Image (cartoon, rainbow, N blue to C red):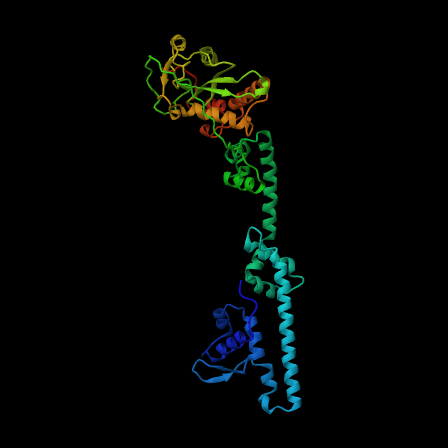
Amino acid sequence: MARKNYSEEFRRQAVDLYESTPGATVRGIAEDLGIVRGTLRHWLEAYGTGKKTAADGSLTSSPLQSKTTTKSPTAPGDETPEQKIARLEAENAALRAETTKLTTEREILQRAAKYFGRGEALVSRFQFVADNSATFEVKRLCELVEVTRSSFYAWQAGATARAERAAADAELEARIRAVHEADNTVGAPRITAELNDGAPEGERVNHKRVARVMRAAGIAGYVKRRKIRTTVPEPSGQKVPDLLKRDFTADAPNRRYVGDITYLPLAEAAGSGNLYLATVIDCYSRRLVGWAIAGHMRTELVEDALKAAAAARGSLAGAIFHSDHGSVYTSKDYAKLCKQLGVTQSMGAVGSSADNALAESFNAALKREVLQDAKTWPDELTCRRQVFKWLTRYNTKRRHSWCRYKTPIAYETTGATATLQPAA
């Protein structure tokens, strides 16, 4: 903002600049000095000689001349006592007017201070002018906070539209909260998909608007702040190639699967160690087709998960199952089961989590969304219940970005190539 306190010398120099510049205008000189026109006019009335330089260089009468000049052209040394008294009274009146003006400016700016710390500076200034327009004239308020009156009136005219938008955002926020309270892990993309599911074309909402309303309301999906990785590789004489090469896609269900084991940590007070989850995930839809939970990491754990997948699909004949080099997956018993079910094994490189990224991502999502900021489950029963709930909702309720924000089962059901069939 412009400086508000000026010395008398500065004011007189400003007046002299106006009067000595050929063809000068109040607007032009005020802009050069960084002051408002009204302030320069007051200075010309108080200190001006009544003359100004025309564009051709000649002197001419100024429409803004000093009050003392018009009333007393006599030099101070030649004044009569009456003239001196009149001059002093005029100067005193001018000083009182200037003091009143500065006092008013200070009061206005003191009121404005609390508005300028808000988020949107321009809107805050408009709001300040609106809130104080009954006490001070709009023109003066706009000059002091450096906004144009036309912009203020345009902002004021849009109040109804802003109120309507605010009401619509409040209604949308309530709908967002309802979805978020049901599952506090979901972010803007999944909430948008939930709100638009089955909604008429005219009632659908844009994901950017949902994200904006969520930011304003402080609503956010859960983001995990720590990362835990557990891998137990074991060398094996069996040579299993990597058939996926980090391509975790499939052109139909029941063609390609990935799986992994992740530990489910229990509190030490539970006294039963940890639980372990083995998974079988379809690359086509990201559907969790088979899974098993146990208090051990023996081969039976991954065998139970694969058998559950075979039961869910009816047959796994011709499918590929991809895993890491964990000891249970390289065991002879597991290889025997895969052969019985018609499953071809595939394995990534030893120690490379990226070669089984889809399964790793699934495990991370499970712990992030169920444990959130907790480090462990309090006991085995709570762990089994919460994990079971999440695993079942994962297929039927949780919208997946890969599935165009449909659930895995809905994606398989509605997909153009979703007819379930064994791989050729």
